[in-house]
View 1: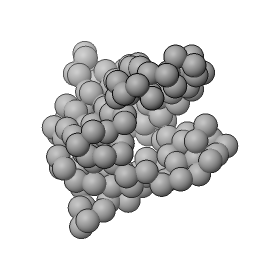
View 2 (view 1 turned 135 degrees about the horizontal axis):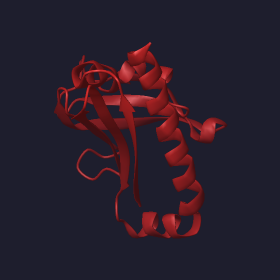
View 3 (view 1 turned 120 degrees about the vertical axis):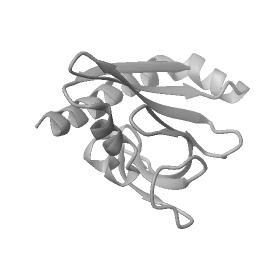
View 4 (view 1 turned 30 degrees about the vertical axis):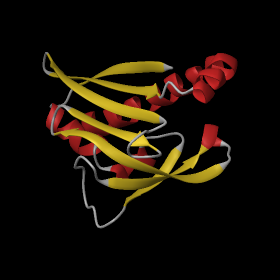
Length: 150
């Protein structure tokens, strides 16, 4: 119910963080979330800020909006958000940036809540969704890499 992908990028952490923490740019990188917007007057990444993402599940549908809350925002280091309820998110997505040599190792991860319903879902379909998430995280990171190195 957790997985991650790491990609090395030849760019400083601050430059990469500016991209991963600006949710309005997610449509340029993610295979599933094609747009997002800040809510409640928020204009950027701060812990507690809310946004909603427009998702096309598995790249084919269904299409829906989901509300998210920023749970970590450390410039140049970490950006994370919970999907669903701000006090008990169903899933937490995280970007961690670690200086490495002349660049940065960027790790994207997800961590599903350990509710009974999600445990059952993961037991039955986790193999397929896990593969999709890994592939999508790699695609997202490779697209960010292409932009920061381009």
